[in-house]
Length: 446
Figure (cartoon, rainbow, N blue to C red):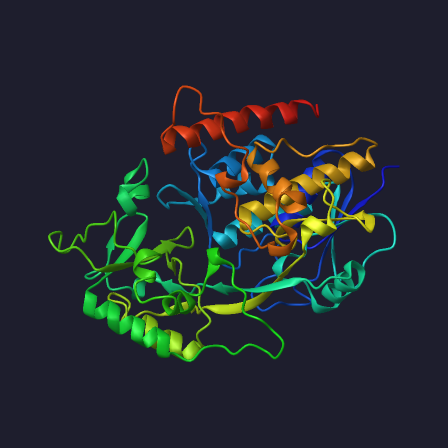
């Protein structure tokens, strides 16, 4: 009888790992502590619950590294990409989803799979034998985190993820705000008008920055450090780096024309992206925050168009831990000191839903292959999935290792024969090369 694969954690990585292994014919047990043991950020017991943004980011598989990762996961029969497509929302060139419907669909598909069993309860120690994947993500329970620290003999690094607030659409003043995707991106009118945009004058922006800097913030506990990942910085931390930082970041006014006053260019623009299929909820793009709740409502209502806003969820902050993977994991994602245990997802030092799910996809396939008596090498480094696993298991400098989104800087350079390539052509060359290599990697497994 085929041995079971045990997966700890039913987030993005754990869900995708379970699906991949089960589809290869290996029985899977998913150990998920929610809802019996909650976390700061989760609200349900569903698998693959999205706790921050509802976006999987760019879906451009020709000139964008994360879009290429989407393509590779689809090519590998990825469950999360299939469910994301089924519950997709208009978001310009991005792949955004109705988060509740998405998580419910992933949960239903996994529970219905004849080779998948979901067992509630918290795993508090590293298992001594069997086949295991730990995919507990950024909110690994304290008890299990201590067990991991004791085994590795190294301090897990720490940073903080901040959650963006969600606004009820009906409470946004559309006589001030307007609907438009940046640069009118998208193939349909719905895609081209996927975002709410709230314009600011220079005076309004300056007043907003003053209030943001003065607002009461969440305090860190003794012994905790605030080492933020740059891709998910709280807005007040960005503002502390310079008064213009937000205007060149999430509040940049480029590619947008105020429908109410086309002749006047806004000094800054706050964008809101649809958060559910009904279009009743919108999240404030890039507005992760560690302000206290009372301060959030006061500061965010200074944004033109949000003066009467009602919030379905305010922002928050939670601790995020991850392994120093270059020193601890081999290229099959196994813990060097206990090779029957693999790690997957954000705890390995990748950042983002898609990257976490991609590492789950790999871990699930590798573990299943081992159980079936085969060895599965990682994808080539010139694929998006391969570039990520190469980075976290040896390509990164261990002393300065930090969470990383997929990006073309992780790929082996393109041979620029015939002269220097423009950026768009160069990115297309990266994705063409990656698709061919990833398709061959999949074919080699059949």
